[in-house]
Amino acid sequence: MKIEHLGRRILAYLIDSFVVQFACVLITDAFELNKRLGSFLVLNREFVISFSCYFIILFVYLALTDAAFGGRTLGKRIFKLKTIGQNGQPLSVPTRILRSFLKTVTLSFLLPMLYSLFGKQTFHDWLAQSKTVRTP
Image 1 (cartoon, rainbow, N blue to C red):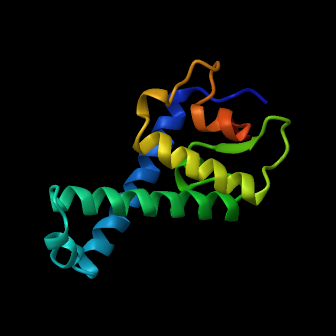
Image 2 (image 1 turned 90 degrees about the horizontal axis):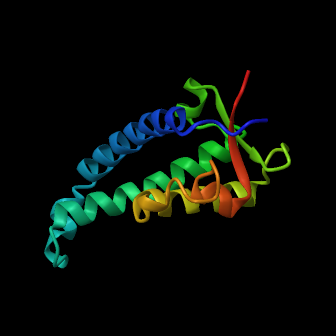
């Protein structure tokens, strides 16, 4: 199967990002994290709390949806995408979790590496030896 172009993958990620951001708002408001943790932080507390919440929830969301739904987050389902191994076979659960962690790190911290020099694969796909393809 052919690796899917970056455009559809970005749109799928934007949908997933919206879901994660919505969850962050609910969690930070429900637990009043800005009020409880704000006095312990040196940096802008809203930024630190929001970014930390986003990072954690993004990883959990990607790992759970990828493992539970066979390589398909909500965004990937909408755009008919799926993550598989380089050999075309489904990824193991540990590999899916590793890929989710790598994706979270690259999207959160290393955005310039997103579209790497390794062909048409993203950096996290290259490291996890996976690829995202269009499904019928």
